[in-house]
Amino acid sequence: MNETYTYQDLISLFEESIRKAQDFESVPDDLLATKPDTSSWSAVEIFQHIVNFNRIYLRFIDRAIRNSKTLPTTKKNSFSPRFAAGYLVQIMMPPYKMKIPTITPMKPDNSEAKEIKNSLQELIETNKEIIEYLDEAEEKKLDLNRIKGKNSVFKISMTVTEFFLVFDAHQRRHFWQAEQTLNKLREHSP
Image 1 (cartoon, one colour):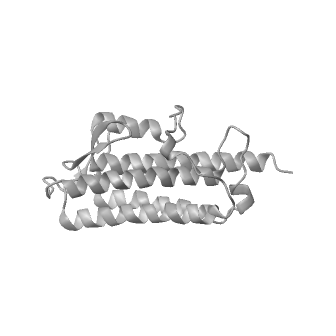
Image 2 (cartoon, rainbow, N blue to C red):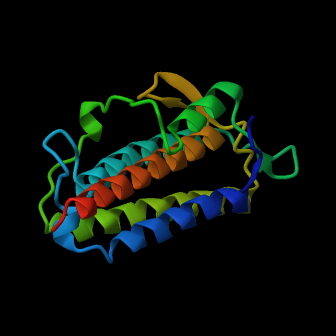
Image 3 (cartoon, rainbow, N blue to C red):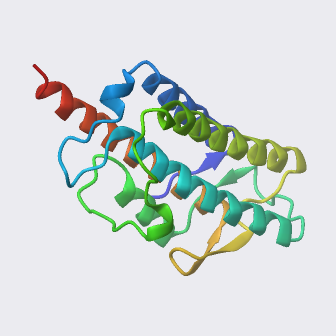
């Protein structure tokens, strides 16, 4: 059930997220800022939510790496999530069937048109930061499975591998949601 990842596999996940975010830059601002209905988020609100989540997870990852002893890899630089985290990643992946309630710190700020490009740029920047962590970990040959940190959102301890994979799955989930939102709006436009 759980896949194995190299440093480069993990880096590729976040490079793909950067490309995904850049693809949204070509969508007209008014479409990105429009909600399909009153109970849904606009695409830009979805991006703001991703950025809020990413910032929190960047702090978790930074704290875990900073507070750990340098733990060199014992395997051939490959990493896997444990069973429970692997399952969490799996249920977060699109197309998802289970809704997960959004906690207050991760709710979007607004859907002002002027914030659209900023939200997309911040989203790209958080992914670049993750890639920097992975580059540094690879350079130091850190064992991402042995470095653990506290996830204050889920109230559990996670390996850095798991933090990276949950970060990625969450983004994929919401990129898919943004695409669905835009498709709804396009279907209902004159």
